[in-house]
Image (tube, rainbow over all chains, first blue to last red; front, side, top):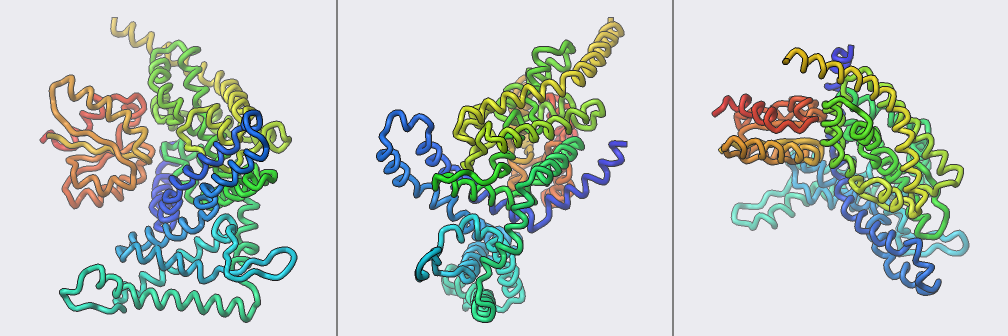
Length: 431
Length: 103
């Protein structure tokens, strides 16, 4: 039965993974990854819990405000990098000059951005771009604009509507002339759109897209039920031996990343963190406990409580990578893939644990992740403390591991008994 | 010298298998260049390879990668699931040899 289902799953997974727009989106977010890690390091350092013991309040304020630029210049304006990345990678996938694609996407996005700040009270200030329009708030408009702008740009290029230079002109000069007409056409389109929206409707596309698309989608994505559904599909895909995160995250990442930046903005401003579900929650409280399916507990159980040689061997092999949340040895060695005994704990435990984490955070027992980006390969407990900036965040992971252990134990025991019997039969047959 | 390219989502989990394969190759006194990359680099790197093995979790990429590999006349296959899980260097190396037609 599983084999038959797998025949349907593999092509669908392949299509999703190879979808041009989804893989461009994935690469674009990867572009901002080192930048967000840089910003996160300084948010963690300037918010260490023991700072108040060794520094005066004024000194902490100075410390935080002088280093705060590290996160403002990276995560605070993340849309800029995502927009450029989409323009770059999408152009590259069409084999047209990529760096111009990136620049055109970025300018198209800026053309739709109001260069004015309206404070709650008083007159509007001209000549400034509110930071959050280039960060969390502008994320969805940025993505939509980048895809549209690049599509227009590459179509004009591919129709060959460009200025050609005679041979002998330096290639860099020839290239910038080749990009001239496609750039003029694309940018004029977005300029006219902005003139139309601002003059006829007296609003701007930032606010329109934010209210009509981004707020509803992120609102949905921060809910516990959609999160459980996403986890369910990730687990199912892995059960069929397919990389669940690569496939599901390419759809969910725009939402989870936006929630992350909203959290970070609130956190660095000293306000309560608004969302529980965000990118760090998904990384640290689902993958960050030994890999997908939180298998560190499974590995430890195999090492210490199981008797069959096969399970002990997988346990020994899997513990090293498992500490750094890489768990392919368990998934393919136990194996978890297509193993009917394992499907129940495999799908059940991450869903139960996610519910527990969610309620621990919504009840205020454990603070939600602050929005700093912690690489998913950082070991359990340390990553939990870093993500929430509290000891409770690490302790919650240990509780979660105990829950995973309790759910898995009976199923592993059954498998172990079968294995022991098989190994005994084999050694008797050999004797 | 045989050149074997391994690919998975980020080149992380396959790097474990690379070490085991290298140990096996050394133990039987053969020479081979074995390295692991993420899925994005696989297409570029395969120009320098004689055979490409991909992690079972990326099995849905096989068709697409094989299309690219045809340009170089090399084969792409999914690593045997158990060999991958148990990091069985010998089995994976033999699978690579078989694909290369033992040239």
